[in-house]
Length: 312
Length: 286
Ligand SMILES: Nc1ncnc2c1ncn2[C@@H]1O[C@H](COP(=O)(O)OP(=O)(O)OP(=O)(O)O)[C@@H](O)[C@H]1O
Ligand SMILES: [Mg+2]
Image: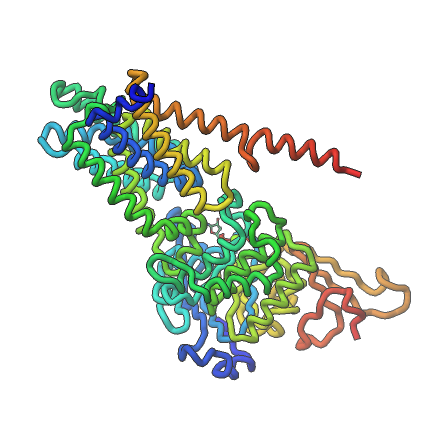
């Protein structure tokens, strides 16, 4: 199995906050998860992420992405293997508030009588005492998190009274307020417009520069090269893991998605009438297509979507 | 006239009934706020019926009835959790299966040993005739439950709202849920004395449902729900002196009336308010 190694990670030492000596890391080693009905959803998964990484978790529906998240949070116990967070066993890491989780929208009860600021305050609970009485600092962190995602004006709204993109931001703010070093995001871009998506990505990049580790499951293949340094391709087992440029290639994606991926190849004559023989391949499993331009050197890695201009 | 209204306060048994009812009503209302949000409202009903065999067995073995009731209630909630975990059955089927099993066992016990227990007391409640000993049990149960809830209400809220997040802030959802259902079992035992097993369900649903229509914030919802529970139980016990009716019936009728009033008149989620807003919005249109 590929274990992620990247030049960025050599600077890891600088990226951990000086207050806590433990280096931020997420290590999944030989994890196999079998559900009670006998389905083995994940088999022998191993990868490792270091401080200051955004890693995309990419795979078809049912490939085990959510299962892997559940294993990292200890919702399901791996039949084999172990997850270690910042060098600690998972239970201890959870107690130390190292992990924050941004749930899929479908998992949230939007009718629950809580206001936006209450939800964000829940992020602070791990930092509070027995009675969970918020201190001045807790209020300040909530304030700051809300401002950072641009939801300050909505703090007194009940959470069901928000748009899809605003809902996403609230839970992102909760993760910010929680100050977890590992942030797990399950499909943060579904139902979000391009503007909000860009803002969320901007925020994630800031967090990366502060040394956080983010694991993001997504179907937006087109955005992956934009903001992810690492990619884990999964289909029950890890097909490939490592730096985006090396792993996120047409060959690997076709392996991960099999026949599911929509695949358009536009060869020379379909595009223009000169004798330019280059071709354009569009791969998509969701809304944002991934575009490969033919006749590129294979080591060059993928380019972004077509509106980024002509291939050189 | 005034003196007539104060008559109930001159009887010790009435004063006792009013205060004990108010206490039980308050704690049940506290729990109702959580149950309603999870769609677990029928759990209260199920537990109240599941308690019957415990009470019967306790009378047989000369234990305090609350101990038997509590053990039965705990076994029933554990049973439901167990069935839920190991099958894909829906919540209602799970609850139905477990509680009818327990209730049937209870009826069987009662019919085999007919003198051992007065079923009518369990089914209808008898707060006006409660013995000092039983009243003490009820008060202790309620106070302990109230103390735990006051200390842990925020943790329980996070667990009920978002279990995954609860884990990431270091809470243990499973432990907290067991605590919650233990309290629920205990409080249904207490409520049995006041309103009887048939009406326990109202005590652990209606106040929360009413408050839900009035608040957007869990903290307020809890406070309002408890206030409704305390007030209706106190007043209900008081009125039952004049009406000469079953206390449980009066309490639950009051709660229902309050709910109906809220349903129509609530400023935000009420029927009239939404109609007004919708027609108002049409007029504003350019
Ligand atoms: N609770 C469960 N019990 C049994 N099998 C399950 C359970 N949850 C998931 N599975 C199975 O495990 C496999 C992986 O599911 P998982 O939810 O991890 O997929 P996913 O990659 O998150 O898919 P999606 O892209 O649709 O969110 C699937 O085959 C699914 O049927
Ligand atoms: Mg999933």
